[in-house]
Image (cartoon, rainbow, N blue to C red; front, side):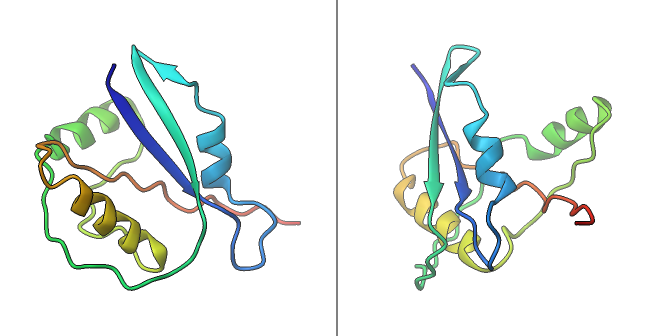
Length: 114
């Protein structure tokens, strides 16, 4: 069975929760015959090895399909800063023999007034 690793960071910056990991926790354990492996990542920053790899997935077509479904979507050439880049580089380093590589970052949740 194919597996997809879906990660989210633990709460950081003084927040009591992180909507990313909450979304991950809410996923089914299996989607369309694919096992969903969920992992909470601590926000601990280390230097990351520079590994330059590109995905072989049809990213532009995927973005267009998402837009056609009525959802906002765009291509980014960075996962952002903080621990996100470290996680991406480490994941890519471990997948050097794989032909499919991708990291998908969800945007920051809009805050509501407290």
